[in-house]
Amino acid sequence: MQLREILQSRFGFSEFRASQEKVCHAIASGSDALVVMPTGAGKSLCYQLPGLARQGTTLVISPLLALIDDQVSKLAARGLRVEQIHSGRTREAQRSACVRYLQGDLDFLFIAPERLAVPGFPEMLQKRKPALIAIDEAHCISQWGHDFRPEYRRLGERLSGLRPAPVVALTATATGMVQDDIIRQLGITSASRFIQGFRRTNIAIRIHEVSVPDRAEAAYGLLSGEGRLPAIIYATTRKSAEEITSEFKRLAGRKKDRIRAVCYHAGLDAETREQVQQAFLSGECDVIVATVAFGMGIDKPDVRTVIHAGLSGSVEGYYQEIGRAGRDGLPSEAILMHSFADQKTHDFFFERDYPEPSVLKQSLRAFGVASRASPRTLDDAYESTSRIKRDAFDKAVEKLRIHGALTIDHQGLVTPTGTTTWERTYEAQRNHRQKSLQQMLDFVQHPGCRMQYFLKYFGDTDARGACGVCDRCKRGSEGHGRELSGPEKTTAKLILAALSQADGVSAGRLFDRVCELKPRTDRKAYESVLELLGQEGWVAVRKETFTNESNREITYRKIQITPDGETAGETEIEALRISDLGLPESVKSARPLPKKRRRR
Ligand code: ADP
Ligand code: MG
Image 1: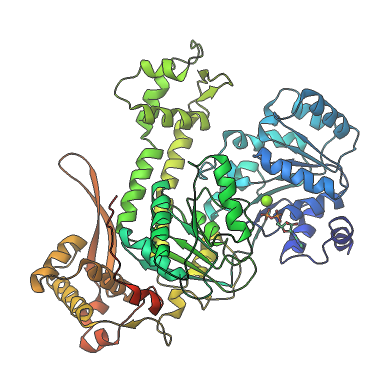
Image 2: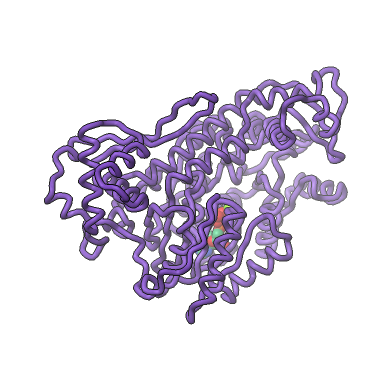
């Protein structure tokens, strides 16, 4: 009752959102808690309201100054007493914030995690212990998170002096493993876990295999259908975002009901980005073609479609991105286009972004032995390395800094710290990153409901069953997909025949076999039939690697026939239905367009 009163009088909300009330009760009555809810679900209230109920100051630790600013101004606007202490503020302002804290004149004190490492600061806090400690964006604690922040890692020990206040950790992205890690690191082993709100009932997810050069046109076709705009298209690289945008402009040039697209990525200057974003938010343009740099803090409620023109790097990222569809609760679609080529792109990114630990070691040596080293500039240190490319060196230095092996001051001078823990944390993060990609592939190939996969992935306790709207749920239902064409049926038969003779061949070899039996088989048709056979459970597709003569790891798909595939005959093949992109007739008949083939 009392909490509800605070909700209305202090926050001006008439009702709790799903699960907020339970969380608030637990925290207000002194339990530690881990709260995992998607972005926009209303996590802030889950610490702010119990903080007020507990009557004292709530200490909020948050990693980004922009997030702190945003929360502070919102709370201040509600007439609450709030202050912030971090490196972005003047000494004077920080001192006065401390004074207010010590006088008990604050409802909330926001700090950056680094602050707890400043000598004297934790002691100051201890003089008047907080009533509640909230750790926002808590996934930064985990070395497995890509946002891992070494300062967060020490929080557990630093907080112990501020107890017995309850601790609440909040995040939007935490797999079971990361959740365990957060709880362990913070030493809150009896914390209640609240993992909720991941189900989105109004987003229908579809996944299609589409080759890289066809994706722009396929996306254009999809978005030409009724009620599919506004839309976001996520591209895997800046270059491909630009290419898709110009392809849209080319296609729009020939049509009456043209789609207006703009491009957004971090390589554009701030002013252009702002303009483009505004054009999309105001409805002046229909489609924003963007890299994943777009979307943080964007609140456009009526996005009808989110298309991924390439495989995402992680299930968390993908979930976050499609979550920008249908904030208004109306039916929306999320369409992922992928092909085997995407895995190669990601392997390339991985090698570029997560160099071998040996490269980090070699780069670290360039800064000398910690006990005797004097600060050096990057250029200086690079001089003394051999056989490392500059890009790789810079990347290695960035990783070494993140993992605490180096510090860089504001003049750009670098000093080694002498710690050796970086090796373990870097390797853990690198392995986790690689695993994330594999999980994304598992998600794509998962035979069951897409939404349920997410719920399980995040550990959401929602038990409402399959979503009923994704491509997996729709399979076999009336009106879904189409019958196979004559050539596709033949291809299916030939694939099964070839596999029953030579089980376990690479996808490339298998294609050659099929071509021997029926020359001029279309590669694209072959790929889509192969995917269908995989979905039917007639063939098993596995990613395998071998090391070639020049010592490079080569990945390929190994295809094997299953017992169901062995027994599938003419009738079963006749009954197959293949889902296509569902392009509207107007687009299909507008083909063929002169197609410029661009290969990456
Ligand atoms: P998160 O941190 O989970 O991403 P926020 O805490 O920033 O989300 O909340 C998202 C929005 O939802 C905010 O604008 C907030 O004011 C609003 N909100 C939160 N709880 C409620 C509620 N019970 N009723 C109405 N609006 C709410
Ligand atoms: Mg938040």
